[in-house]
Image (cartoon, rainbow, N blue to C red; front, side, top):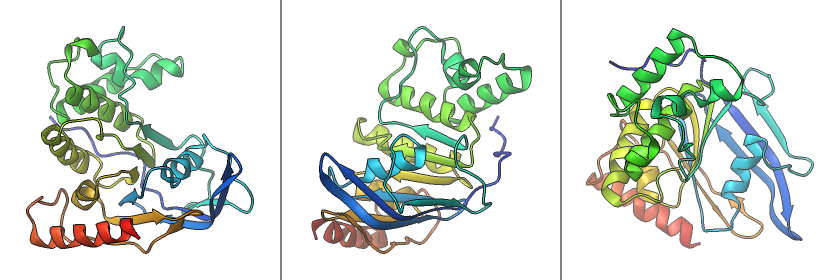
Length: 250
């Protein structure tokens, strides 16, 4: 069984003229980033350059300075229309796997109906965890826990998905497998993913941007061809990886 396609249509989002100072240091100024509807945009750059900060501005967790402007394709505010997946799985250990996926309902003090429960089960099936609904997080491996976190993110069915290095703490093989799962389950959604891994970005991203410098500047988009997830041994991918590494070193 597979989870239904998202009911919410994808949304284009633009951050323009973004500016932020942190601890007296100007992180970025006049920064612009376009997130095309239904596509995955990956953001790379050295540590401390402001990638996560830019993501947090979109999530409403950081307050930018004027003249920062966030606009959406439908002209409506972005608040309340975001799903967020962090590097840590953030599962609640006293809840079952199924209840963790349905956590949004609990936080909204809403009892999930049979349709919501069925969707949660379908998402667990889709991420390879069918039959584990009654388990607690402690019974799962790190990769399995991140699969639950991915299912919980998808359960929210929001038009914009923000992912902050969601697979960086995993071993290489588990990371590759979860990249494939993410590429399949996030297809058709608008996604912004922060990552340090050029190969990860090339495997699942449609538009790749590199932030460098202080204050940071946003490099032009790199757009790999072919369907995702792309093969790690694709010669074209390896050539693009070299280009990404060159940009990161600038």
